[in-house]
Length: 253
Image 1 (cartoon, rainbow, N blue to C red):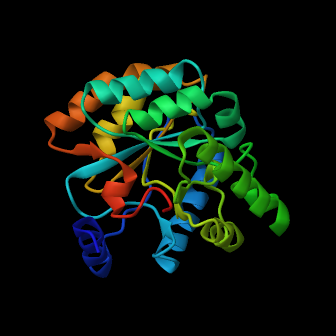
Image 2 (image 1 turned 120 degrees about the horizontal axis):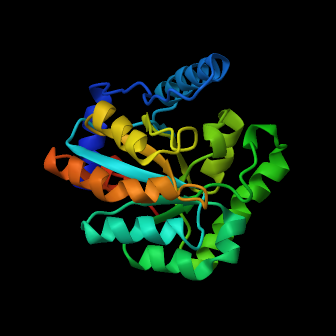
């Protein structure tokens, strides 16, 4: 058992649990209500299935920066380069069909030391799929990532954070734990560099799992990275990859 896994298990026993935070002044009231409802459901699922579903890490001065929906030819490389420039590691949840189109970018991200993880085949809402289609979706994505980097991920994030017991079980059958997030930058709603940084600066806590995106429409996220990283480092909160934060293997052996 690694020291990181021991650290995480100790904190699980102490019930270090975070609610999901992050705000946008561009959301309509109905959308905000739906988001708040999902956040409550996600936290309850993580508390009910603590060995299988993760919202945050332990109470340490480390955070995990995670990036969904890539790869692409512009935003993903820019984010990965910024992370590497500051000597920190990120965790990229890639869409399988896009991995198939951009294997060289996926390989470059992996070889730079960042994590390449499973975010479904085509970004469908997995809770709407039947059991066979769900298994096929996750397996196809595992295979595409393995073709690009030679290993299969052990961590998975469902599109939209839409997970139920069937999704968690299907991920587990592929050897994956389900990882959600505790801080949403809302870079998918309010695509403004300053607001993305504001959410992190205003809300970040120990053991945070931060949601951002590396898809083509998220150029503001890439622009935010240098100052966002500087702020975290100056505050003594080191960005690390999800494997280190959670004390879990990132890839299957």
